[in-house]
Image 1 (cartoon, one colour):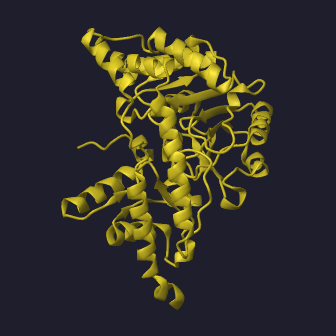
Image 2 (cartoon, rainbow, N blue to C red):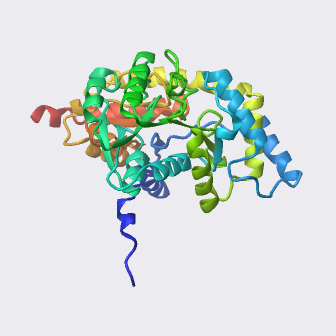
Image 3 (cartoon, helix red, strand yellow):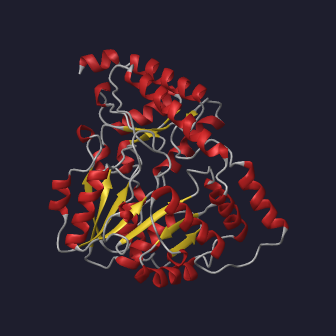
Length: 396
């Protein structure tokens, strides 16, 4: 049998799904597991959105659309971004995809060549580095440190930019830390991008999930519309993960090349799904704001609970639906050991910080997209489990 293409060795994955599989295997043996590993709202899609999708199916809207998406949805996205974020884009700059990940895939494939460099946040969503490497470029991690409230060190960013740097990936609010870039940081990064002629891939998938302060899009800064790819989607804000609906707003120079990538890969996004997305944006269901308010309550409860556990400290995340507690004080060898033992010994599924890059060592990511009752159960289990480590930690 002939070998696979060498590029396949450069393709990474999401560890969350591997941990989910381990947790499901334990459940199959009768264990009770609290799932805090998957970044997925636990709420149902609002009924009005579901009804719009069902109605489209019943009307027979089961055929192809243009590769870039239906005009009605692209217009709704342009209006939404203008009204909610101050981002002004024409509908013909919007490309709709089955989920938001393809926007990363297409943008990085379209921009990066062998020998190019792309800077990405560390800790950060693992698909950034995976796709940079798959495209043949070199990924350069930009460390996000707890002492800076998980904000990038802008002097360090400047040092990382080289003559080969072509793309800068931003993610605010950030997965896994929940950090939110300040307006001042956004403006300095924009100035650097203009000065060094960088493309910016701005992942704003959690842009509606901000609890402290405001979300700021780099696309609104002077001279940034023509060098920014804005990535967003419906999974997080509208609890539509399984619908697979995302989009990107592209500078005009990239619209046709990326539309070709869509045509060559998925052809288009399902018609009835696009109708549901149009309904989501056109008549924002009240369930959305109730969901966001509930996430805030959960965040506050989890942070308070974790900070009461000896050996664990947890900063208050400003956005998304994750906490990123520091677990070095537990005295174990690595955050991977902490995550593994929490799953097998305490029945709590979490992700080790190193799933998101080397700078994640010493941390765990916990999703609070779960009920308050389950979150309380998880924190109680973590506290009880960690209390049994005390003699071991003291001995070390």
